[in-house]
Image (cartoon, rainbow, N blue to C red; front, side, top):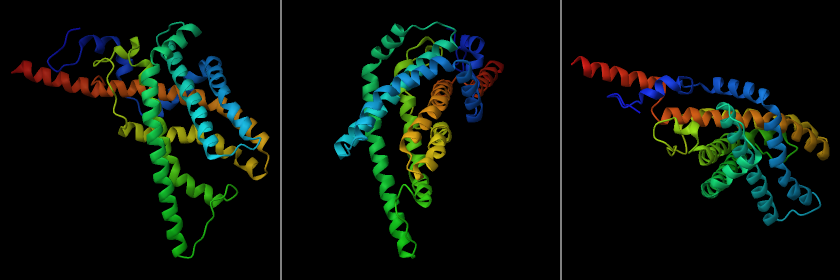
Length: 295
């Protein structure tokens, strides 16, 4: 592929101009919602299929298994199911973007090929998630101690609206940021060598774990994943646990396809930016090339 003096591949400019235009978070979310509606059935099937293994520890814990070790195992199972769902959805989205058909065998084979990078990313971000959680917990304890010094007491209780607000403010954004960064890494593991990703210069470029664009986008999982939780909160106050689970699952089947598509589109948007192929970089390179040729 020929290169101008600025270093931007000419073929990329002409063949993938739609992929190169930087998108705002709102534009990416809008595209994700439209895409998820058009391809809702396969994406919803992925959500249901990937979340099925998480029901086993959830149903067993409901019978009285509440030890710390069991809760850790339950968290591992649920997060692993979410990782599988995110990766499967990303592969499906990538094939739809290229107007290619995808069989279940190809889907499983792609995930198996990326199994080792997925495990490495999973361990790395599991440690980061735990560290972030501990830091947030310490901040929460400091806030509680500081509030008590001024005569304001609040109890950490699932039935306290004040507790939900304070915990949400302290924990929500940092954990959503780690979740989004980890899912970008998981998508990169399964799509880093795909045909679509290879269209960007740099090949399987390793993306930075955190990016201003990712920080800005961290509000999206809070809206799409936190929204159903807030809607089911009144049911928890009524102690109707079964109905709460059913409604939360139904809302997840609706919202998670949008969230998975959003993360995949955000990944390709980041690839365009980091690969130096966004329109701003291209125009700057062309200006440099024109200036050099005029001399």
